[in-house]
Image 1 (cartoon, rainbow, N blue to C red):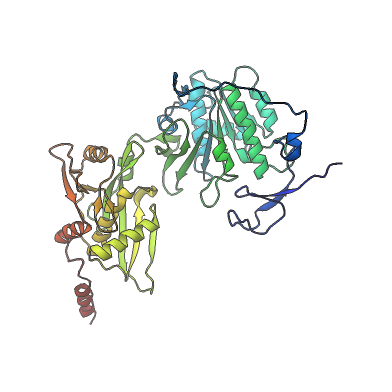
Image 2: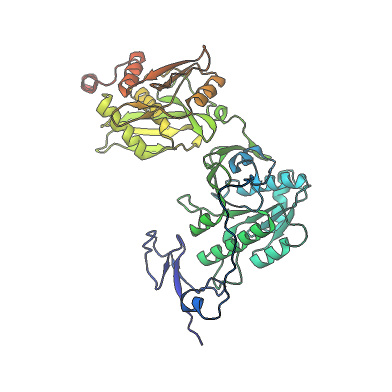
Length: 479
């Protein structure tokens, strides 16, 4: 009898070892390595793969780069924001991996999308591995979608799912909720393990490619916000989308992380209501709602998310610190980027922040990552330190270099048009980007960070940058 070789696989990253270890060397996770028996249906390796008599592969034709190029056929989902993220709709035969925190609204979004597609006459199947059919029906009833012809099932065996969906007309969309609950008979391991997740996903991907069905796999999310399971699943699928949001806010962000058939920097904005998720056609108005125009330390940033301009409020609080090492707290932005902006303000702007706590927040819970937010962050910091209220009708965007120079950013025209549409009258832009949309809309070009500090100090109630005088006056007041 042939000896069965045991393998040890990390359940966090999928790394394979020949013996058990307490810590995974690939992801540095503790107690994540589990012993698993390799399945017999996988590709053969070693001498058995090259034994005599093995069937030879078929010869396929090779083609050149020239030829007719056709765009992949798409199926509109019926939800505009979802179509924006996917690139215009679901591609037939594609597989999408959708991740998000528990309770964020993944199942609600997919139920609305499946009902909208089924209403157009397409066959749609919703396979739930975590909830019973009755629970899914209750959710559809709360959303007012119980009358739509969506096919439901509660099943976790991949072979049974593939065989059932193959009967009759292939479905245009199949939703698997979730991939961590699926299991296949070809692998001898528990559901949710790396081997089971990888093998189950491979079977569903093969079904999607052969039948032309668009498949959406729902994935769990770890504490770090990453989709649980092996990273190889993200490379196997055609698109990876992340559903983001905060339980304390009523809006949700659908962000494309990977997309073979569309852009990877688009976002879709939804608002959680009593009747499910509603599309937000103008996200800038949502993020700027309730803004305090008379508060110091706030600046409006004109950003870009894919092809969509987006205006958000940057809030900063600079307060004297009683600690030996002042605090630096950031919500919605890169902490390393904040440290760089603070260093540039001290070195080239004459601002002394070494004895102050700095708190930075992107209002509304949105996460931004583009360097164009540097200028808005710097303006909010200087405004908070000097207690100078920034002009409420002004937007800011620009990248700050380590020399203090303000560098141009892309798509300045789209940013300015969005600001003008929402009633703003002026923009602080980098040098060379002084383009105006209308005569009523003005732009002021900044070349160096010192120009920004000087402009805010001229309108503020007290002077910034003179750290010694300011601290001396503060000491006299205390005496």
